[in-house]
Image (cartoon, rainbow, N blue to C red; front, side):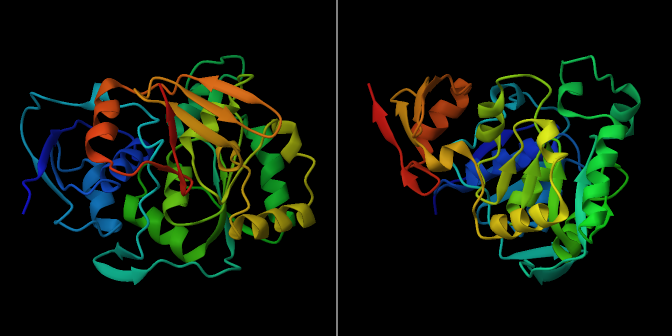
Length: 305
């Protein structure tokens, strides 16, 4: 058996944890990660998503001398699919992933936590304010959800344990609507349709699409667009997303990477984009060493010099 690859990693947000683990699980290797707290989110992700010890083990140490946190970016899983568990471990009970339709709730992700709500300023276009909307604006989405016949579930409170959030989403949530963040990444893993609201910054849609490579996701380009939806349109959209008809621009376009991963070219039917992906060197080295077959939305990736 090949020896496990060792990393050390300090605390990180759930969405970034999911992206990092998805990248690791896309390789043929296995890993041991040392963390600095027994409450590290990786423990919950490994348990709830039933990641076997043969692929990943974790341990707690007092000091991280080789912490890779600053060597990771939010786009590290750009060439890797989300982990796709068939079963979940909820409260030490193994349950199947629930892909049944007509669940009663829509989950509305509004703020990362209560402190972000208190500090929200719609004139501040820096992170994290640029991800959020005012309570008045969210209330209009609240109205749309209720008029479409759904109950509303908000999971912003950090006091709700990770596995309880997973249980609620898996059992009862038909769709997630909200800001770009961890709950949307979780929705992708659970194969739940997701509607992601735009950042309050112009010309950033490619960044959002790159962070959420999922076929059940719809990206709202302008916030005012969702305010024009009625219940019939919303239900039709959710049905379409269940059938993997999302609007991620990378799914419909063709992508070609520079061989050193420092740049990529995205070609769509109407336009060509030349972009810097924002990888850290650690991630580039990982792609080249550990991921043998590069794929992107189940399409092979082409390279240029």
